[in-house]
Image 1 (cartoon, rainbow, N blue to C red):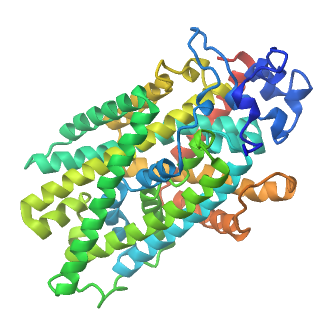
Image 2 (image 1 turned 180 degrees about the horizontal axis):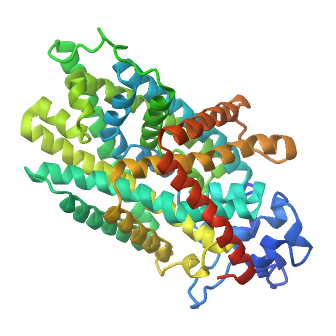
Image 3 (image 1 turned 30 degrees about the vertical axis):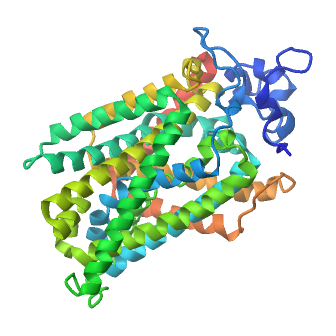
Length: 503
């Protein structure tokens, strides 16, 4: 039986008599300011009748087709959804951030604790998101939830920050990691400008795949998912063999030696670990395209998260078994050093290729979900409707191209660590309020249908740790935190300008 929350309104934005419904006719200005007819002021949780700013049928200013939006194409099943979430997380992070975790907490044991805590934390967040995704089954992730629960300004600020910074900077970071591995594998003296050139080529290639069609993107993702899981399995097996043979590093003897006692150092290490898990929330960006969101969203979350946590813990144990702490601390391209330590130059090259392909898979998933956010934001009125149009392949081509251009800008002007810290502060600011919404809805809308309910302690744990990360991150990286806060606040006058003048 079709879910009643699967949006009968998504199938068409016309009433039975063929006339367009009243909400669909409202301008963003009317709906956000409270002016217009009575429907504009009704709660967004009168779902059966009033769920639809994110999914109305319309044409953009150029007459481009956007009928029904992406929500009418139910082409994502459980395996593809699982693949997207795992692929987004298992990208370049596990092969680039172990050094940044270890250098801040100082010991093998502390590093493994950071990876485990990071995984459990994002699992609590993903479980909370699964409840929100079942109750509000719309594309757009945080943007949809924040807008419906806290108001239009909150939804706009998230879209403003995510579309302009969070999503394209994440794509830029992944592209840079991919390019760095290719550069180091191919050249004895790798130059930074070569890595930036390769990164630009990579983002253009992946964007082209996503423009051609959703099926090409999902099939590409599934193939690359097999490659990246094979790479992590290979690293794990090789490390365990070395450890069992007694030829590796005997790290268990001094597992807690030199552990950091400064809370700020632990916060920065957690930011690095959490960035490697980033992507845990992205199933919620394609909820409306899942064939059976009520059944599959919780299954995706509770199968993908333990898979990634286990893979990351085993990969780190393998790294510590083969490389010294000094080698790990000084090497961002840890997989390259690992491969060379195991099999010499050939091993390093093979593993570098595997990591590059792994990054391609993560980048493909990032571009796919980011385009859905841009598409949903444009339909909501947060962006010009130009970006809501679909191409002749039924893909959000303009949304993909916008993210591609922004990612290229970050590749050209950005560096890795400041981008990661900025991303962590801004991202967890919105994650905190989104997960807090689970608790808000439990009290304000107890009658709301929830196909999946997480344990009440789950969002509480996430919110407490997120607050710790935010406060400690502000003291440990004040410049990046200040920039993140200033950028979010910049969205406030832009929002009111949009209300007054539109786009």
